[in-house]
Amino acid sequence: PISTATLVSFGVGLSKTLQPFMSSVLQSIKIASRKHLDETGFRISGQTQWLHVASNDAVTYYHISPKRKSLLSTLKGIVCHDHWKPYYQLKHVKHALCNAHHIRELNALIEYEHEVWAKKMKRLLYFALKWKMHHQGYIPKDEQKRLFILYNKIIKGAEEAYKIIPR
Image (cartoon, rainbow, N blue to C red; front, side, top):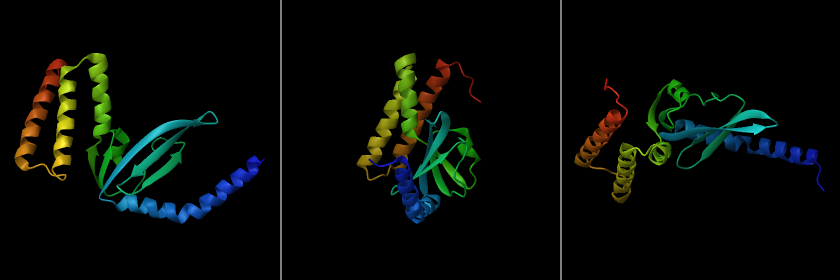
């Protein structure tokens, strides 16, 4: 049998060995033109910890912190995220919202609230994704205009459903 102390010692040694690699992964993400950020809570010894994840097309960086708002700093480029407000405090980045999170929220509205507009929005997002995938990542300007018109119609339907007065 291997003692707990031996396993901890192996972990500490491996962590020191991987430190230069992890630093290069972090630097790669910080300077990437596009990156995705997310966080999730978990418990260690009864204490809540936060796993912050930052990734680009090639690598993923994990950061554990007892503070939920322990965000990476000095990021540049486009940051795709779930619309969590602290991400908007990041300076020198442009924001993109994650469609996987949108789909999850739309699914809840469809399943539990039976929202017709949510079903239409989900279909539109999948249609736009399929169009982009089948055309080498490019959506022509005229098709973009058509998608925006459909998007705005669906949003107006949502506003009407919730009796929201447009600003």
